Structure formats: structure tokens, C-alpha cells
Image (cartoon, rainbow, N blue to C red):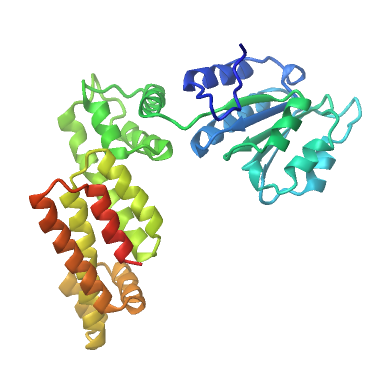
Length: 343
């Protein structure tokens, strides 16, 4: 029985999907490339990497044109023009549309196509599930679909090891897992951190040890604190909750995360009360040991937030800390209660 790669009931392995990409990347000329290629899956990193791979491939071929669009900005007329029947002497062209689900008339556009011209290849990326109408029209046009299911932990580790290998990084036993634990599950973040390490350890002989990597792991954890604080200051509470969930799932101690939330409450209260008393910003920055740009953000934040409410949130932090010392209460749930209190 054939695998239905677009069915939500079927979980395609990452290696199966990558084998399709590898097959397409081995094609020797634009004439052999499928007229329609569709990439489906929630991970933006994988979309970007595959599309960039296709760009690089087509740039190696002579007299090819490459165009890129975002689904939110492309129009029906744009694509109709690009996919209209060209003359026999037109250059082969690759048109890439990212986030095609944001192109509101994509189903109508595809339905209006009987076929794609010989010289044209259209690559569509969908970060959300295909609608039945879109899927039906892709099949009608003979489109080649590459489906990336939601990544499991082992998938992320597999891809990360590939990045490390490409960057010629070699780690002592257990070190790579330590890096992933600190970096999280976002592949763009993982790649950025590995690229930093590649610069730091350029020319390093032998494997990189745990002792050598530790200062950079500590720095990465500080980045998480910085990100969480920024989410709170910007009232991006859903993103703060997601970051906390990821940190808890990776084994970060709950008390440390709670400490970041409590410190945020205290700094907001200190800034708010000092501002009410007319304390100069320069003196306040010195007292709290905050850079001026951070103090300005806390000042704006404290003006938006009732200080009585912030006092109650700080009390909730103390309550959660006390409860979790004497019970097996779920840390993720407890920390989510605190995040909700900031709204």
C-alpha cells in the first residue's frame, strides 16, 4: 500500500523526507526537475534550508531565473504571469513562494492551472496543513510533495549532529547532548550556537571537552533569562509560557525559573515606586545596577502595570515556592499560574 504523505494520520520519518530532498538535489538539469514541488510542515527552518538548497542548485545551471515571494505579499496576477505559457526560447525559471497558506486565493489559482509550462518550476511552502482543495489540485498537477512531520527529539538531535559535522565540530562523549539541553529544540538557535562554537574552536585539535564548552553553555542559559525577561516586558505572555515549558521539559530547575519571575516582579515594583517618588533615572540605574536602556523599558512597563497587581504576583511567587517545597506539584503548571498573573 502506498504511503499517503499528506495524510495527518501518517507520520513520515525525517529520513524519508530528506531522501526525497536528496533525490531532487541530484537532478542534473532544470528540464528534469518537477514542474511543481510542495513542501509541507510546521518547521520554518526546514523550509528555509530546502528552498535555499533549490536556489543554490538552480544557480549552478546556466541561464536560469529565480524568484522568491512570501504568500502574504504575492498576488494572483503575479503567479498567473509567471506560470503562463512561455515561448520555447524562454529561460528556465524557479519561482519559490514561502508560507503559501497566506496566499488567500492559492486554491483558486491552482484550480485554474491545467499544467505548468515546460520552462517553469513552482515551489510552494505550506507551514500549515493543506486544505482538501489545495491537496486535490496539487495531485491534479502531478506535484511532488515533501512532507516534514513535527520533529521528535531524536529528529532534532539528528539534524543538529549534521550541522556540527558540516562545521567540523567534534565533541567528547556527552558534550553534544549538553549543548542541545542548553540550546533547546529550535533548529535556528541550535545552528547559530554551533556556528559560534565553530568560530571559537576554529583549528582546535582533538575533541572539544566538557570543561572547554562550559563557559559557553552558561552564556546560553543567560540568553534564556534575557529572552524570558523580554517577553514579560513586551507582554508576550504566550511566548513566555512556551519558553518556560521548553525549559522545564529539558530539565531546567523550576526554582531557578521562578526566581527569574520573582526578580522581574521586584524590579518592576522598585522602578515603579522610585518613579512615583521622583527618583532621577541616573540614580535609579546606579541603585538597581541596570543599564539605561533596560531601566527605560522597566519604567515604561511599570507605568502600564498596577503596582498592587505586581505585589500580588510577587506574593504568588512566594506561595508557589512554599507549596512546591512540601508537595509534588507540577512545576510547569505552577509557573504558568505565575505567567497568567502578569496579564
